[in-house]
Image (cartoon, rainbow, N blue to C red; front, side, top):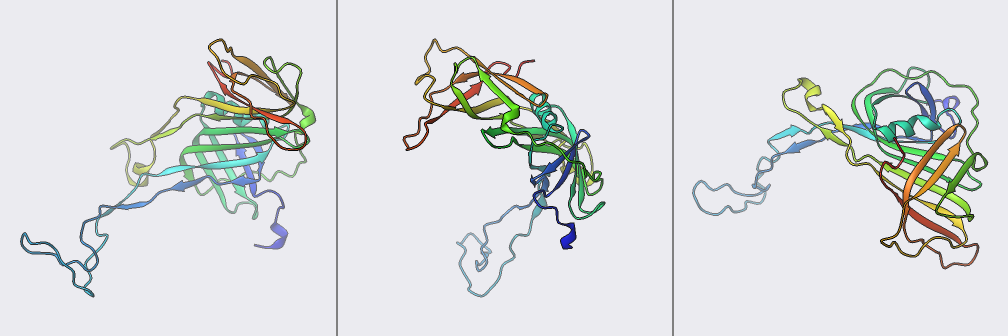
Length: 284
């Protein structure tokens, strides 16, 4: 690879639902193995011709790994990127609703080279993370029904504004007036590949026929300056609403706060308050 083709900071460029994303990490790949039905005859074992026990003949070789089959195909992996004003909402909506979408990816080695297209993807896990003074980072794991070694995306040469902490507003009815220093939340859709018999032939017979979304789990934590919150969850604990807005992106999260984690170290007291999403955590 020529030095002139290097693009510092980004491994390549993805396109999700027509939205261009410059990626700091991309690892969406097919996964398949060759599995064997193993017998009980070791490399130097003797095979008895009657009901006697097997023995050993050092130096004689018995056939090993003789019966095998290809395993089902799973297509999945992850993507990470710094959020911009143009790409922030696209993956969140797909994670929230469990919808299908397509992903095209182009490694930065020249137009038309090392590109892949993934069809019928769903978000398995989505993470939103930002700390005061830093930029907003997004990561997501996908599963896909199919992929091809073709496609590619257009060359995005336009400048984009990164979303920094000053553009992010976070508030919560359960934290009062304490200063919020950071927030991270994850959406886990507990995806599962579904395989069926006789629906296709060739390599397609090993690919998933569907991707099922399980129970959605929302977890995260808010970091605050000082020591707010409760030490215990009781039978009178009620849910609270976390509101997040950034560059046209808005969402509320209905949560229950868990006991806070107060560090016993020198320096500013930054308390981490875990939470778990309840009901329809992001609304309808």
